[in-house]
Image (cartoon, rainbow, N blue to C red; front, side):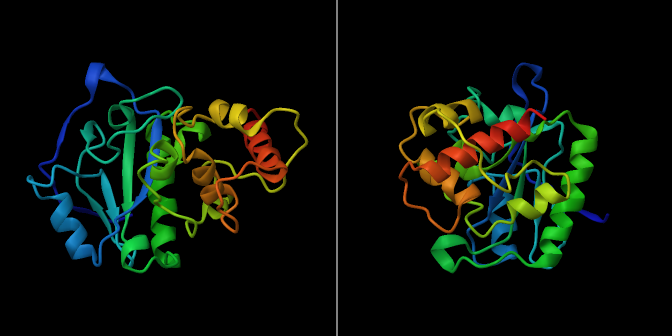
Length: 222
């Protein structure tokens, strides 16, 4: 795997010696990879990620995995609010919803799978810690979006994806909190749907969402 060293000045130390327990996927939401790299390496922007993968599948490393990149912003997952100190962030070049959101090219996802597998070999990241930006910040973010191939990644051993729901008596609200979504986030149902039922993102609780959430939790425990 070829990784292009493209250092960004936007990083710091992981706070309190935090171990990496999360892998966070993003899309850049910018028109081109050059624009994205320029912003992620701009000290004025004060944003970064550990890696950026272009639409051609090129992998750029911007920040060492030992350091705290500035990719997550305000967010929460499983009670952890300083996601940056606990995570590795990967940006995928994609114009996003603002500039013409589109399917991620196969070569880009191939590189993502290879890189993610490599990261998982180096860090103790459980399936419950493999998330999208919209999972940790559902009231602010939509990326990596409803076109992101979560099922394909799960089939490659990166996270889990429920192929069918299971019966449950629990409410969706309770299930989403167990999964890790911020209990106070207004748009967490939409974030869950964007990831697990992208064909219907209406922010409404129903039996299908409940059964998928229960199935996801069951898969995590296997």
